[in-house]
Image 1: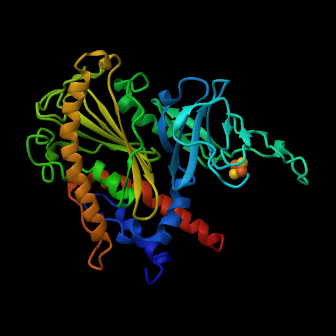
Image 2 (image 1 turned 45 degrees about the horizontal axis):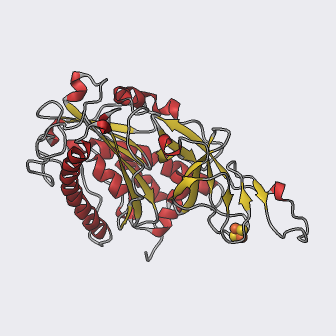
Image 3 (image 1 turned 90 degrees about the vertical axis):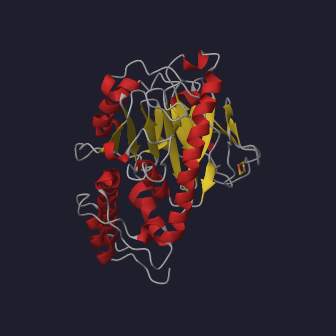
Length: 395
Ligand code: FES
């Protein structure tokens, strides 16, 4: 970047991305490429919004834990011996080694470097050979802890301990997904996802996008979810997410070569719900693709202006995994999904290249891109409010 984009005009003009979809223009390309903007975005979004890190059933038993990173902050999520779910920084308060990696079960976190030991509540309980160190009291030291909230079985954390709770602002979306009963849905912890060379918003927009379905994915694996049947319902203004429904050409459509659900249908679904797919987004990290027999969830973890890592998980109806043919049916779904995902990933990577070009402009939207406008309407006020706050603070 030769000149800073961070000025009043940039943030004022941004408002045109949150107009109605008929009037709106896309965000400026720099919002997807610029390192300075990404640093700003950490404060505008990631340091204060609720961030999905995983599922509660990944940490069922006391001592269970898993680790992750968002905006390069190492995080450990654990269920204490007291049964309480906690999220903490996994950065050792001695010399910054990570006290936990991967996932497992532990009674305490012993830092491998010099064996400082932390309880599952983050308190430093042992620090060897520190008796001669002046003004050192291990009781003053603990892993920083974060707010935790559970929503439909998903664990959300917030780095801001003063942030208001999430669930009240997701009430409208809770109603939309209630019949899937995701608290009781089953699905293993997915392997940590791959790192992708495109901005986290490119990924979220791609998964939101009803417009490309009948074009990029044209063919028998996707034609039964036509772009022309996309609907973008209005939600209360303060809702912390948004969704699209997309009618399907037949009931219980699913992504495999038969075009129909192979796994048991979520038992609570209505006929209407079985005749559409539902795409729910809780920015900046969680995106759901909801079908009659499975829910695919994406946890999108920003890692810089032009990279993110994405964990892709699957939820199915209770008992679905007991079918002896479950793995074979699942394989049929994944084969189709991987074909579709490969088409998306190619586009995402090329879009990131395009966004870096001097010829990238702020484009216009089709009515079938209502979810992009909804995303912009979530982003723009947060960007503008943070910019105004920074200015008031003389930053
Ligand atoms: Fe953890 Fe030294 S860095 S004990």
